[in-house]
Amino acid sequence: MANFYSTQRVVPNILLTGTPGTGKSTLGQELAQQLEFVYVNVGDVAKEKELYEGWDQDYECPILDEDRVIDELEEDMKTGGKVVDYHSCEFFPERWFDLVYVLRTDNSVLFHRLEQRGYSGRKLEDNIQCEIFQTILEEASNSYLPSIVRELPSNTPDDMEENISTIEDHIRQWKASKR
Ligand code: DAT
Image 1 (cartoon, helix red, strand yellow):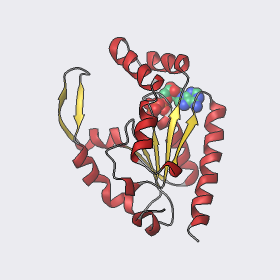
Image 2 (cartoon, protein in one colour; image 1 turned 45 degrees about the vertical axis):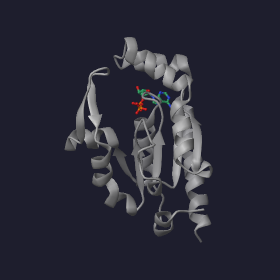
Image 3 (cartoon, protein in one colour; image 1 turned 60 degrees about the vertical axis):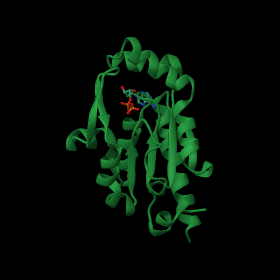
């Protein structure tokens, strides 16, 4: 069943989530351009507005202030037409999203991408484990209606093309279901 906010929207909001390096920002920017949607990289928004609440000693990175991120984006999310990119998904309000995609990448491909990005040691291992254990898929499945959560393979440029047409199909179905 569609949530209240979803019934108010004439175009859907899309969430792209998955382990770092699976290709969320590559797909998200291309998709937003083709659909004429707005691309929202939550990590970049947090950085720009300094939406942090401390420092993670283990990972040597700032800790996201989730409540402030929600306050920052809430108004924009009501209207639809957003492609949101973040490597976690459980803290977003369920009402924000009509379509949720979890990008998946084979371990050897992901390992290479993260190495290229300069990840090493524990940071590299933890991210590979995150993908092996399907952590983000489980998180998405526990946070959103099963009917809107889908996995997308994200290993090759052909996968990306295929994913764009798959998502376009889903948007058409979403619009048709509202008529
Ligand atoms: P994320 O935003 O999930 O961290 P990214 O979009 O920055 O990931 O992509 C990580 C790297 O992988 C980057 O060098 C681009 C490449 N990449 C992304 N999607 C791909 C695909 N479908 N095929 C081949 N390479 C891809």
